[in-house]
Image (cartoon, rainbow, N blue to C red; front, side, top):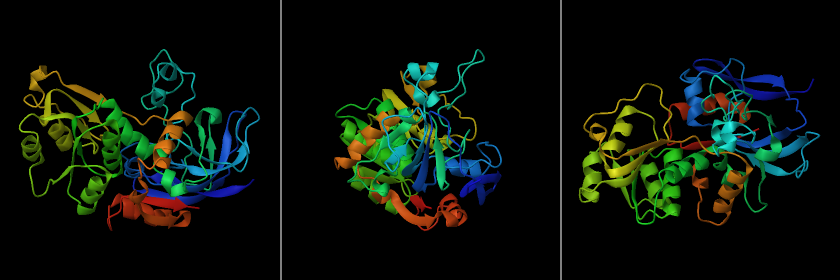
Length: 357
């Protein structure tokens, strides 16, 4: 049996490189040889034991690669073709998919659906931090990479870009809107770019890391606030003449940024939540207007599927969304444990890492 190297979840606090069998594929699947992947903040939640997955599972959900083998019923693709697949791999036929929410895909059940069921890579099936990856429902999920785009140019599309843009889309940003993004990690920075594309004309970014504040400006932020030197709520209200923002995007997943997002909304504004929360949230009575503020709170799991990936790559190829500068560090798959140590501890100005087998 052919084997490959893969990064697997061992136990809370430990992800390690192991030998595993190369995946077998079914008639609707594809096997891709990974050429580039990356580590996501969600993988760090898995590493820390804050999000449970099975021991021995291959982690990772942001694949760029080359088709190695196609299932007997897969048509429209060819072996040797460069492709990406989204972090979310909808089947296309569940109730959630047919309602237009492929991220919540999963087997229909009288007991209710599984939240985030469309997220399979590195969650319920083996993921992309490996030499090979099985892509389920390949015709719904594989998207060819245009020849003029490099691996690193499209590396953000499977998750980070899709998630950040979705936070802006779900916020229903309109031309002329004022938007704030709390936390300028990879997803928050992608949300800045998405807000700009959707027509926001005053974009405010909040973080404390100078490099991230500078990148936010390059991606379209008109104002940046360092929360270590200024109270972001007070500064945002000053920048909006006390009006508040139309849309606040929360991209960290902690009580403080969620609450601050509420406090800067105009009446009837929208809080678009992108953070992955590891504890219960509290709605402060005053910030929530005792439930009478006409606020909208929406949450988002990144859309997947081949059409979503095609559209994101079109945005990259057009030059309207260049997120390749988010890749700050590069590692071989053999160095995956070192890469996790750097990324999980946010050292050396890391934003995203590129992993190449």
